[in-house]
Amino acid sequence: MFSAPFAATFDWSSGVLRGDTVHRSSKTLGQMRGLFRHGATSALPDDTLLYSVQWVAPGTPQAAGALLFGCTHLEPGRVGDEYFMTHGHFHALSSRAEFYLPVSGSGVLLLMTRGGETWAEEMLPGKVLHIDGAHAHRAVNTGAEPLVFWACWPADAGYDYATIAERGFGLRVVEHKGRTVLADQQQ
Ligand code: F6R
Ligand code: MN
Image (tube, rainbow, N blue to C red; front, side, top):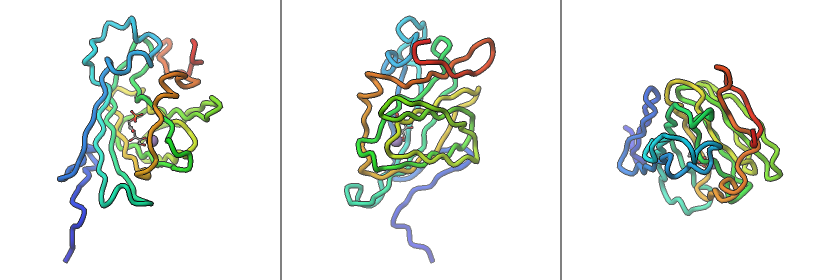
């Protein structure tokens, strides 16, 4: 009755993507120390897992209009007072937007223009976060559980990580006296 040209499944309770063509990558603290304000002095080991991403690239990814689908599992924790976060990036093509849909956990999505204007949106299951193609985006896990979120974006969006590595985001998400607050980049 059904044909299955694209064989992948997504488990909405665990956020796990399965299929023949699921790719996976992960990031450890050792790869991201410089992005955290107190990364250099943190006693956490380099092999501390911050997040993993599973994604699928169905059909012909290089074809115009092709979409990618992925799911990120961002661990709970902090480097000093700063919550675990994704590296964050601009899309190389500023016309290429993206959706983030939180599956479980709780956190914050930091968004930033090329001019450095930065703001935050809440990440909670049920929210549909639309990311303008011109805005850098970084997820931050402020909860005690993994922050799991689904994403869909154009295959040709591309990644500009260098700008974030050089300049960071205009805001940091930190724990202060038991509360989650936004701090200026230099604080
Ligand atoms: C794709 C996208 C997500 C992220 C993932 C990891 O455009 O935004 O799939 O790639 O959440 O974050 P980064 O790529 O910033 O390490
Ligand atoms: Mn993106």
